[in-house]
Length: 396
Image (cartoon, rainbow, N blue to C red; front, side, top):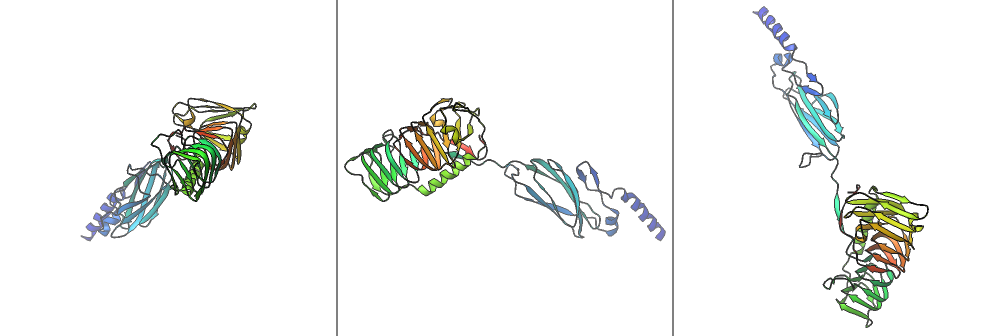
C-alpha cells in the first residue's frame, strides 16, 4: 500500500507540473491551473484581488489626470505575489512579491488595459482580471465673456468727460462739465447710468437715468435729469469687478494666437483670421505707435481678440478697415499696459486695459472701455461687444 501511494503521488505530480506555470501570450496574462503544491497542502482556494484607482473616473468612464492604481490581494493562506501587465496606450509588466502592488502611473492619453492576477503561498492562482483605463485631456473650462454693461468703466478716476452715450462708472471721482451721459439708452434702462465711488463733480449737463455717488456731489441746478434720479450710494463692487477684469485680461493674453499678423515697413498692420468662432492675434504695441493703417479680416460671426503687448501704447492719426467683422466683434486686450494714449483716433471695438491709465482726446470709442482710469474728452458711442464663450488656453 505504501508503494502504491508513492507511485500515485508521482503520477499526480507529473500530471500537474505541466500546468502549474503562468502562461502569457503577448501582453495578455492568464492564470494557470491549480499547482501540485496546492494539491498536496489541501489549500485549493485561489486568492482574490481588487484595485484602488485614483482619481475616480468621470460619469462617462474617462480619466482626466494621471491615474494611479494599487492592486491588493487577500487569501487565507497568504498571498505570495501579484503579476500585472499593461498594454495599449501605455505598456509594461511586472511581478511583485506580497499582497500589494502599485503599478506605474498611467500618464499616456488613450486606452490602457491592465491585466492582473495573484498567487497564494500554496500555489493557487486566481483567474486573470482586466481593467480598462481611458485617459483623456481634461475638459476645457469655459465661461461667457460679457463686456457690454458699460460704455466706460474704470476702477479709478474719470476726468474731462464730455459726451458718453451709454453708461459710465468710476470707482474714484468723476469730473464732467458741459456733458451728456446715457442719451442713447432705452427709455426704461435707468440702472447705474452714472456711478461714482467717490465724488461726483458734474455741472452743465444732462443725465438719462439714475446717478449714484459715494462721498459728495456738486450736481445742482445746472444738471438736468431727463429721467431717473440722484442718490448717495454705491451699487457696484469696483474692487471685485476690477479683479475679474484683470483675470480675464490675463486669460485672454495667454490664449495661443491662431491668426496671422503682418506689420509692414510703411506702417500697415494686417490681421487676418480664418476661425469660425474666435480669432486671436498677438501684436507688439510698437506696431500701433507707428501705424498708418489697420486692417482686420475674419469670418462673419466670429470674434476677434487683439492682444497688445507693451507697457505703453499709442493709437493716433490712422484709419482702419474691417472685413467680415465689426466693432461689436472686436476686443483690444492690453494685459500689461500701464499708459494708453489715444488722440485723433476712433476705437472701433471694446478696449480691455485693466492696469492702464487712458488719455484719450479728440476721438471716439464705439464699444466699451474698461480700464484703471480715464482722462480726456473722447466721446463714447454704444456698440457693445457681443457676449461670447471663452475656453481658457485654447481659442475656439
